[in-house]
Image 1 (cartoon, rainbow, N blue to C red):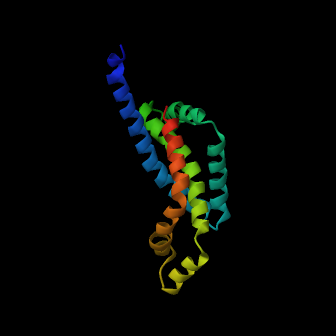
Image 2: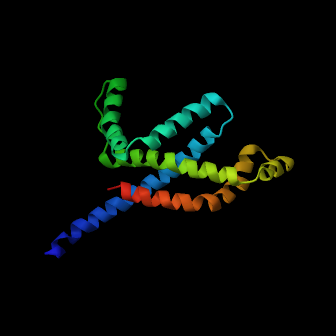
Image 3: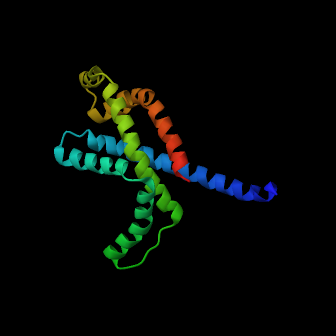
Amino acid sequence: MFTEYLPLIYSATLMTLGLALASLVVGLLLSILFVSLEMNKTACISKPTTVFLTLMRGLPEILVVLLIYFGSTELIEKITGEYIEFSAFNSGVLALSLIFAAYASQSLRGAIQAIPNGQWESGAVLGLSRRYTFLHIIMPQVWRHALPGLSNQWLVLLKDTA
């Protein structure tokens, strides 16, 4: 009796893992973007990013998924005048990536703030640009601080795929 459901369980497991891994990759990239925008010194960039991230963390996940799936086709139709339907998988990846990025950006922001300012100053003394210092000096140290929080977010993301 149970063996007839094994192919269905196998395909559902592969779909869940594919959705979670794709959302993880896109979400990590978005979270790095969000944290750099949020930590920007310009208020016209950091404030809207903070508001967006707060809204994303405050909305229920299913609402975000439904807004992306149904709202994206409606938005594209309003802009272009053509009806374009997005696949459920791509909409799910985008929605879960935005949710994951909203939470992961806070873990990354805390990890960046845990790095002493002397690291930034040492990069400046060596004549390195802020971008180079961030990518090659700060970010390798950030992962050590951010990994526990990101692993918890990965588990939440895996459960959210259901």
